[in-house]
Image 1 (cartoon, rainbow, N blue to C red):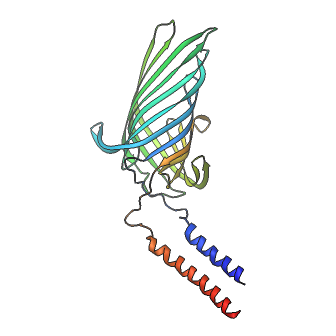
Image 2 (image 1 turned 30 degrees about the vertical axis):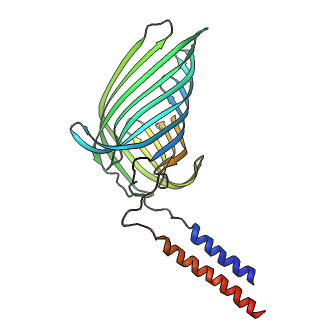
Image 3 (image 1 turned 180 degrees about the horizontal axis):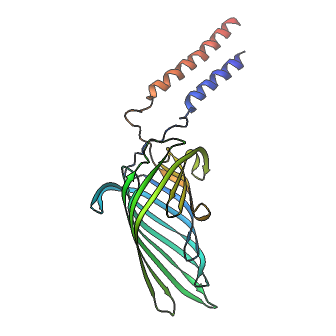
Length: 299
């Protein structure tokens, strides 16, 4: 009898400590300076390059910026990355190392990226029968004005919403191959981008950083870009992110390696203070001791 009783009460103690939050609505994240996330990265780039490596991003500041005269209070997110690449350029095999530095400004209301500046550099060798030094640099600056925002927090499985962005982008590219003249190109684009969000499921995801309960957010842009983001409240970001063109041609996969983020409780949902958890635990322990005492007295 004692073994059974102690087992049941011990299980109650364990449950009182281990019970976590159930699936529910996703509230607006509470970001602050020092939050950071590190991902393994597998990406492709349009000349035909396949990239492997790591990406790290982190909140470094808050700042007000203007996009087409519209003011935005934003979070400043800095991105760095590095790794190796292989691929083809003008029919020749190329391989080497890549590096990336970037800056993103996240609108604190919609969490859309309203400004981004990215530099991606490839350095390696091109095989044309003999190895030639190869260098490729791409610089991109993009601004997105949030025209409509019907995707709001909190959300839950089954919810959906639309966002409309007025986007302008400039990309410049420099290619240098040993023995050849440098090639410069520049491309400008502007237009309206319609974005559709939907929360399609609540899913458990295992990555190197751990096991997480996530909301699977499907993000589709009118230009064909599709993103599957498995967002975790605990992490404050996606623990796995897949991007593709039309859901068919994979262009990027990221998995969380480590993170620094503390979930902030809102004033309306502060959770139970430690004392309230200690009270039932103390009661259970007292019941265990009382059971043991009564059994000893019967002997």
